Amino acid sequence: MKYKLASLFLASSLMWPAVNSAKDSLVKVPNTPISRKILAKLGLDYSCMGGSKEHLHYLMNDEAREAFRKHQHSKMALFEAQEVVAEDVNSMFPELSNDSDLGIYHTYEEMETVLKSYESQYSDIFRLEVGAKSYEGRNIYVAHLGNPEAEKSFFFMGSHHSREWISVEVPLAIIKELLQKYERDEQTRNLIDTTNIVIIPMLNPDGAVYSREKYKMWRKNRKPTEDSRYVGVDNNRNYDYKWGLIGASSWPGSDTYMGPHAESEVENQLIVSLAQKHNFTGAISFHSYSELVIWPWGYTDKIQSKDHATFAKYGKEMGKIMGYKPMQISGLYPAAGGFDDRLYADFGVLAYTFELGKWFVPKEHEVPEILENSIKAVRYFLVNARDPFAGVSNTPVYEAMRYLEKIVYDLEVKADEDARWDSVALLDKFEVKEIEQAMEELAMDSTLRSRILQALAKSRRYGGLYTAQ
Ligand code: 0X9
Ligand code: ZN
Image (cartoon, rainbow, N blue to C red; front, side):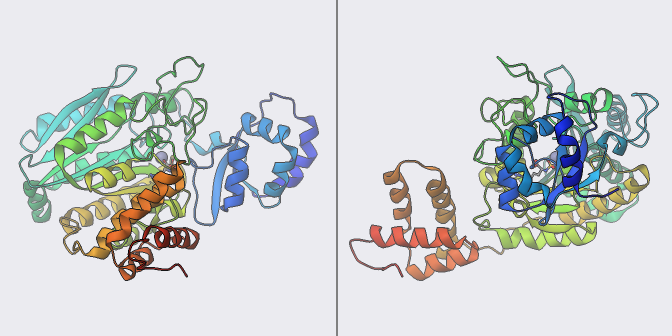
């Protein structure tokens, strides 16, 4: 049932006790900077539920009610336009008779059994490694398929986020598909013989088990935060690239808690060590939900990446296969410290995130199509994106784009004025035309563009090459 929330709240807000036990509902608001600002001000996470360019979902739980109760004024603007999408999020998870049978979904133990059986059945082309031990002592499995000597490496993974159960099923389905088709399908055999494929189906097993057995909406890992009563870090806010800059929380109770320091978590350390070891060409991190194929940058919506055209080329094709919308991550909302930004920025990986399905745990009857399409998209990726940056030549404009990316960050973040202008001076070696073209190709925000051009006018004091308009 969908209805405006305003009347519901006006009717019931007077009766809310400080703590109550109403159901946790899923609420939809317009995705605008202003609603993001209000939600952030209220301390509510808008960057971890579903969304689109037009709408954001967030969770109306006791904490949110309490925040709204305390800030009567801020809530009104938001109320006008918000809708309850589901009254009780718990009703959107499968009814389970017991925790050891999740229907079509794998438990941690079932996943373990399947992976071990592949190890004995396909020992020539499959190897199972315990990449790391989780905080609660579970194995974080890394599956290696194909040819470890191959020049090309690809990486697929699931379950940064515990409640996103479908994100485990897709990597498992990819493994099964590639192994089972190896003998009878030529394309698969070629791929396996010429590619080193690394797959982590469940990066965060502690959280995954907790979501399946204790609290379905659990998102983070399960490591307690020192000197606090809270548990868990959001693994997709913990990576060491623009860590904590935006869309992440420093409060350990938050669902988007970024952790005590960058890459403090064993899960994140494992991913980075694999990236260091394998020289991945491409990667896909599976999440749910929203039916999106997204790519860097996540940390800013003020620019595109210098490789946006390349990301868009493969992203659009995979979007078509999935029936999903392709876009830059920050088109949804900027959030820093994510997997894709880190792999792209520091290892040059063509790294995507897929937001699978319409809910964290899609209905059983929806799962086969999601798996089938994902397998097709992964095949497309493995076959076509083997040398994705081949067409990109290191022209002065491309190089200027690289500098501009750094400058945008310095201008936005550095408090020290001198350091900011020093950073802009890096552009002195480029022609003005090249800089302007680079800004155009980065689709740079216009305010930022004029700030940089003005700063440049100052820094070009020797030759007077450029005068700001
Ligand atoms: O916010 C996230 O971590 C992902 N969405 S989710 O609803 N599954 O939590 C999107 C991650 C996109 N990548 C970056 N923000 N870098
Ligand atoms: Zn996620």
